[in-house]
Amino acid sequence: SEKLSGILENAPSKQLVILCHGRLCTKGQYFFPELAKALAKAGFSVYRFDFAGNGKSEGRFEESTVTKGIDDLKSVADYFTAGNYEIRCIIGHSQGAVEALLFQARYGSAKSIIGISGVVNQEDMTRNKFSKNQLKELEKNGFFTLKDGAKKWKISGKYFYDRAWYGDIRQSIKS
Image 1 (cartoon, rainbow, N blue to C red):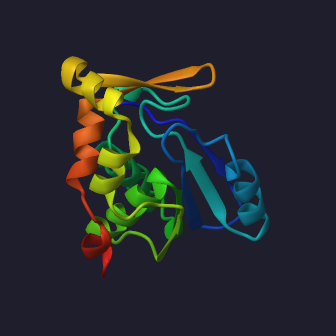
Image 2: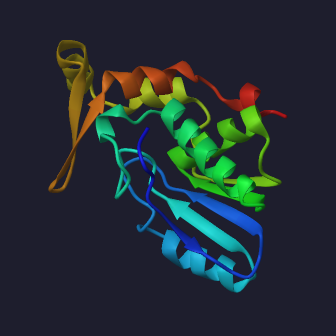
């Protein structure tokens, strides 16, 4: 198992908020640092972490999947629960929102969940997000390359099919 890299904004409280980043980003990008500081100032302890294979956490990006993200979040939740923290809220963005919602549906560890820009139909989003050439490359090589400016990521078949398998998550998270 990989070690996860995280930052704890430790207010004098055992009321914890966990922040979950989306695909192709890390705990230190976008609004996460500012949100963590604001929540800590409001009296919550806040933990933001990189999912395995992302940012400073161990693991390979190509191995990261939605299922693995749920498992990473379970490890984080279990660690803090064992330290007598109460998980008041999990806030996830994009894929992190999907993982937070599916995690909560399975384990119910948090008092509340906030999902920001999560996609409900994982199969539709997975199959229709990528070009025909990318899908051909996936069939041929078991992965395709996604480019964003100077950055390149290998999107593995493992990730692609794992995400698609979740389908429309609304029934799974209804409760």
